[in-house]
Each structure stands twice: as structure tokens, then as C-alpha cells.
Image (cartoon, rainbow, N blue to C red; front, side):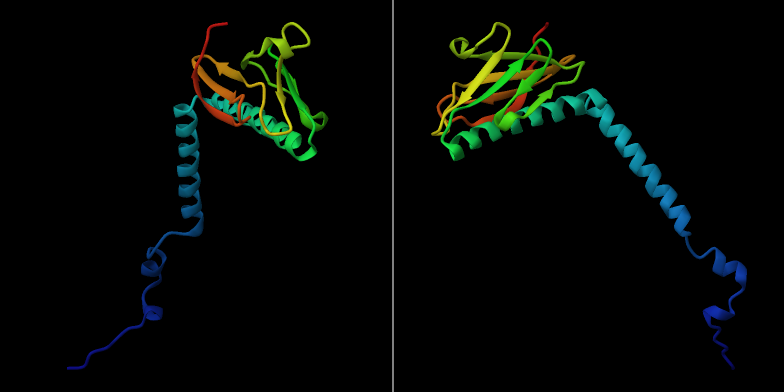
Length: 165
């Protein structure tokens, strides 16, 4: 009995074409899965406003940390100011910014260091300590608190409860 082995090259063209997926088919499927994942994540995390809330809170926390480290490295008191009414802030080394709407801002801190009514001030001292305070950013029912410990000047970011304004 004679056995004939055929190589893949000898297979009919119709069998070779259906052997797998094309690169375009794979890219389309990967793109659809990525798009659905993004949509699902945004719906679970509060959408764009939730992303904006986290982004702004991280920016404020970063600027507070910068003010503390500048106070320690230069040996001079650094001031971080925030005006909750319009969301504007100023920090170390002349840095300024604004918290975008529709986010709400509230400040809790030491009244004696405020130079103007309606303005929140946190001072950072040469040894890293501070006057302490809390900046709360909120939108709808979500809120993030940026807390500054008065004794150590440590800046922390955590979820809070939105206060009605």
C-alpha cells in the first residue's frame, strides 16, 4: 500500500484561506473590546465629571506637597491659598491654577492666617509642619478631601461626604 503525504502547500486554496483570522479582524475585535471597556469604566466611575474630580484633587494634593517640600528645602515659610468661591489657588514658587466647574470647593482651616474673607490659607513651615486644613472638592454626591496634618504637614487624599452647597 502506497501512502502519499501531501504538504500544506499542496492543499487547496479554499482550505488555506479559512485557516485563521486576518490582522484586520483581530484589530477590529481588540478595538471594540477596548472601547466597551472605556465606556463601562466611565459609567462605573461617574464619567467625565468623576475623572475631573479625581484629577483636580490630585493636582491640589500635588501642589500642597510642593509647597511643603519647598518650605523644607528653602527654609522659608510657604503659603498655599485657595478661594473656594471661584476655585482659584496659588502655591509655592508662584504657581497658580483654577479648579474647573462644575466642581464645588470648600475649605476648612485656621481662620487666624486668612488675610481676606472667603480665602483659605495653609502655611507650611521650615520644619515641614503646617497650619493644617482641608480642601474638599465635590460634584453631585461624590467628594474627595485633601487633608493637611498640622503637626507633620503630611498631605493625604481620600473620599469624603459631599456637603450640600
